[in-house]
Image (spheres, rainbow, N blue to C red):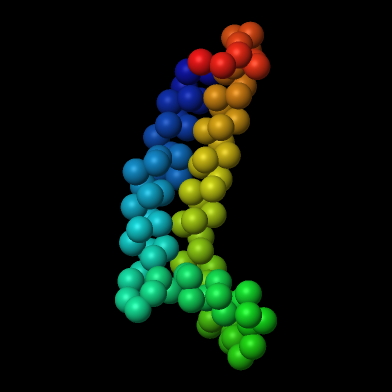
Length: 94
């Protein structure tokens, strides 16, 4: 079991540092006049009129780090919850 936990911790997709760096570099690039992913999200929320396949691919490329960040957050919250349930501290504050 310890070996599995060690492998899990070595996975770069489970590293806060790696994921946050990806979000800052790939997820927000280019930075001016606004982050690229933000412009694509606004475009899609406005009806995605005129979006081509390349634009959808761009949205996936720039949005993927943010999905990884959400995934990592959910995994960490789940681990904390499971640790609290197994230790019998569920529902206790502090």
